[in-house]
Length: 97
Image (tube, one colour):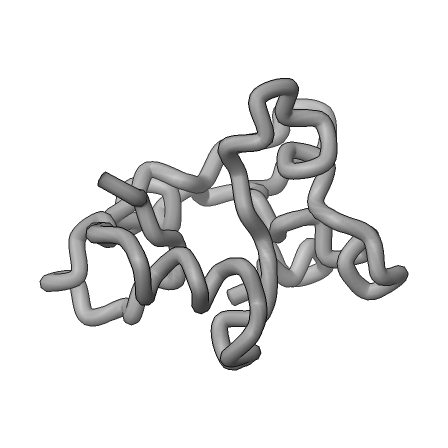
């Protein structure tokens, strides 16, 4: 879920509640943020910066619903896990074993 900067009051309760420790407070803006996988870059057809700049190319990004895409192929051929599936948030980041 994207963070609405206009409505964030900087209380930081969402940081405490996040089961993945993925949120952080931006002192300069006075709001909480989290990674959005470079949504603006993805909207332009580019990869997230962390994927594009990874020197060893260990990060893979793509459409999980694309049956011929790299993410789907990896998940079908490798063992993997997600963090805290018991939280009920349907995590979409997969860690390959």
